[in-house]
Image (cartoon, rainbow, N blue to C red; front, top):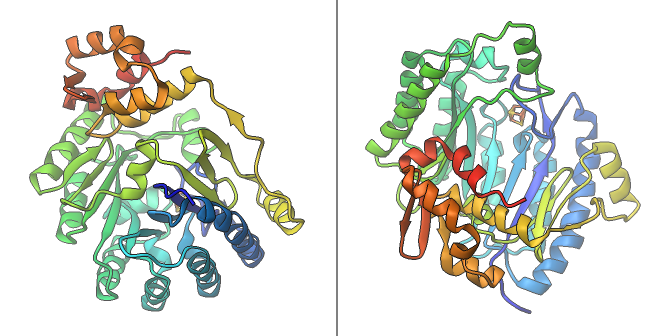
Length: 383
Ligand code: SF4
C-alpha cells in the first residue's frame, strides 16, 4: 500500500426546504427516500471506500456535506457513521466535519455525531437577523442558530465553523454589523463568508427576472465586503482563502486539500471525485443513483481525462484562492514545466496591477487581488 494524503466527501442531497438562493444538488420534499438513499450510500462507502483505503491508507479528512446532512433521521445518520467507521477506522488527528442546519439538530443528534467520531461542525447560519433569514428562505431563526452552536459546544465539540452571507436582499450595513457581532460573540474557531450570487434555477433568479429582487447596490456590497475582510482579521481570524477565516490552527484541512490539489473520493449522489488525475461526478439524479447502487452498478458518469492545459488552469485557479497561492515547486513537480515559462506574461501583468504578489516560491493574490480575483483567474486561462 502506498500511503497518500487524501480525503473523503459524502453528499446528503436532502433539505427540508429549498433556500431561495440555493442551486446546490439537494432536494426538498423527498423525505420518503432517505432510508433507501442511506442504504445505497452505505453500500458505496463500503465498496468504494474500502478499495481506496487498501491502496492509500487512512484518509486525512472526512466531510459530510449537502444538502442538509442533519435533516437525515438519527438512525440514518448513525448507519452512515457506522459504515464510515468500519471502512475508515477512526484515526488520531483526522478531521471529520459534518455540516449542520441549526433548524435540524438537538442534544441527542450531537451525541450521535460525537459517538461517530465527528470532531468538527460547520453551521449554515447565514445571518443573525430573523427578517433576513425569512427573506432568503432559511428554516431556522437567529435564536435557534445561537442555541445550536452553544448546544454543540456543550456536547463537547470544540472546532466549530459558521457560514455567514452578505449582499442579501434588503440587508443594510447595520444588519451585517449586528450579525457579525453576534457571530463573534459565539467565538467559533472558523468563519466562512459568502457574498450572495444569484444563480439560475433559484427563486431569487426568477424574482430578479421579474424585477422583484431588492439587492444592495454595488457600492453597498463592496462596503460589506471591505467590512467583512477587515473586521474578522482584527478579531484574530486569519484569512486563509478568499471566503474563509480561521483562528490559528483551525483552517479547514478538508477544504484546503481541495485547493491544494489533494485527491478526494466523493460518495453519494452528485458527489465530485478527483483521483489519479481524473475528475468525475456521481449520478446526480436521486432515483437513478439509488437504482444503480441497488443493481451493483457504480453510479458515476464516465471519467474525463483532463488535458495538460486544463489541469494547469485548474491547479492555478484553486491554489490562487488560498493565501499561500501557487507554489512554483509544486507546479513544476506536477507538470514538469516551470510556472514562469507557462504564465510569464500573466504573472508580470498581474503583479504590475497590484493584484498578485511574487515572493520566492510563491505567487499569491494581494488583498486587492482577493477582491478582484476574477481578473486574475481570467489572466490564468490557457484554453
Ligand atoms: S440548507 Fe443549504 S443545501 Fe439546503 S437548500 Fe438551503 S442552502 Fe441549499
